[in-house]
Length: 183
Image 1 (cartoon, one colour):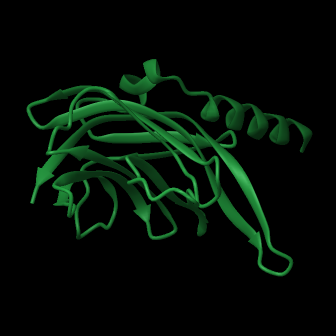
Image 2 (cartoon, helix red, strand yellow):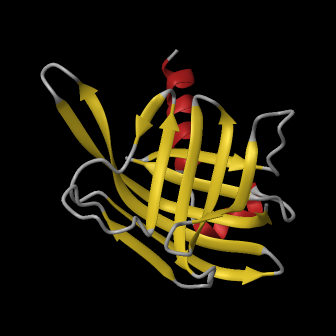
């Protein structure tokens, strides 16, 4: 019994150890991929999103805002209980390989230039408290495909009465071979 437990612990440790350089090992070929850690728990989404399966990775230019800015989404899903959406707002449709950074402030009317929203095991994590942030960097944008990385801090409501909100770190975020659809 102890040997089986040790084997499971070792397997879990190595399965959670991931670096951006491991992308080609876990993601053979050019399959779209999003991966990240939330407080050291790893999440990964692969394959092109399809409506039939309800899972995979997708990117899209969604719409123009009233100020003629455009927003793009990068999303991944395995099912409704496990999703991630990264959103980037660009001035005048100028998505390019740069860092998009935003720090949430409840008192600021500023547009949210970069945001992230996560559902992990049916638990919702959002940028809802002052100081939550998103850093999304596009490292490559060629032929409608983007690669990049991201980090941030999101919050989750633990309890309503009394109100308890906890912050969580998003680390080791990467996205590879994400095709941007222009709807």
